[in-house]
Image (cartoon, rainbow, N blue to C red; front, side, top):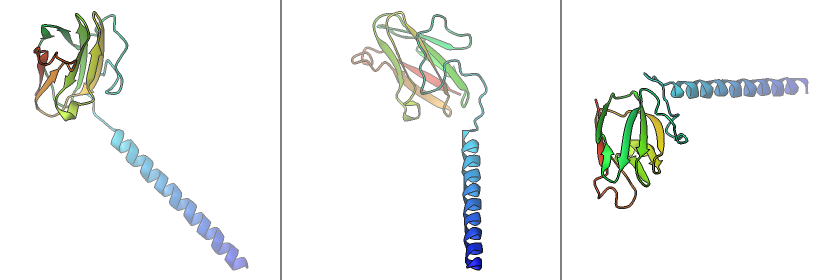
Length: 150
């Protein structure tokens, strides 16, 4: 009986040590996967956060106006793998800025008349990325543009 009790205690200790080892390995891997290098500060949160209407566009943000005549400017350039801070101001009616490429599918901004909203995201790999207003009929009315990533 005594030998059996010692064996049970040894097995329990081994199981606890194994659980602790697994916990620390998983925790370490989570920390490693969250490590990112950002070269500028996000001004508007992250992909999942669109700010409340802004009274003033922060310094360093790319400011784009949208109206029935389209985006102004229609094109802008950013650096690959760096944080992009984008502010969209609606000049008339309801508008949006969404990207065509799947890699940027979560980057979306919707604004009303005389409203400004912003979003921060990390620029993808080098290339040209089309954006447009996804309000029905607006894309066809030439509310389109391009983000150049160098």
